[in-house]
Image (cartoon, rainbow, N blue to C red):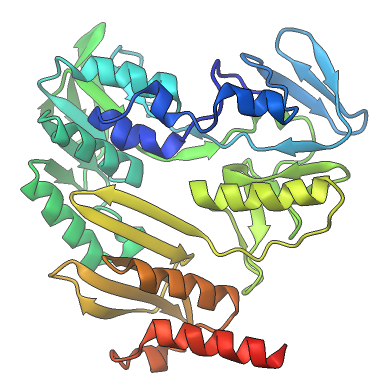
Length: 384
């Protein structure tokens, strides 16, 4: 396992949650004890930056000039946080959050922060804003969008998240563009295109990621967006596989090529790629899933819907007890909900067996999803 970092694998999603809230430390986010890797014959190569991969000769070249040969290669390099190309972007105390080192640096900088700005109403941006408010640190969120998560969850749930964050003390400026950062070596203000000046002693960027694939620029493998196109086995080409944020893969139900930046989906894909690398042919039949804990919500999302025709709600959105079904062309592509863990689990299983109810049937708000799952299992057992 080759990594440019200097630590054992860790739970990256916790960086914008418990770690940033001060509820966990370095030991708590590490996924496995060091002994695990030794006991399972896993060699880790720390602080190694890959410069290039020769997929014909099967050679990996490091920035140090060293090389290493491989028999089978998995590329799971994830994403690189986007930055802003505006004047003043080089000032200190302007951060991105991706690695443990990033989180530790940000946490230390927040200890004396009086005017913190988060740019971007993404999940990492809003989770970070929530974590800072848990520590009573003032936060202003600046975003191009009209509300948080509008393009992922729609306006109703976007407004719900916005209201809860505002009640928690977050200030918002929506529909804005960043003109520049101002300061003497260290950021002191964010200036908007409309001329408004937002005082800030630190800035955290949450404006998305791009595939971490620069080292493959001469490999002939990259798509136009910098990702790697894989098949249902996560194979890029002969003896080369990819998984996670960097992989564009065929969604097995729709046939659509998609790329998903979800931790849990990356885990699913890594397992499938590993089976195939070891000679056990396995097709991906997983269902994407992500979760977020912020402003008191225990929010879960299953499936994938880049676009939708309609969102059908079960439950009570105002009471924060609901499920929302994202539908398009007469099919349910995804569902999201709060305080409905069992139903979300049932939906994941129903999607996995391709037995999710139609939108017309879901308009019956009395539909029992758990009973529907039990019925599907009974039919499958009977068929077997």
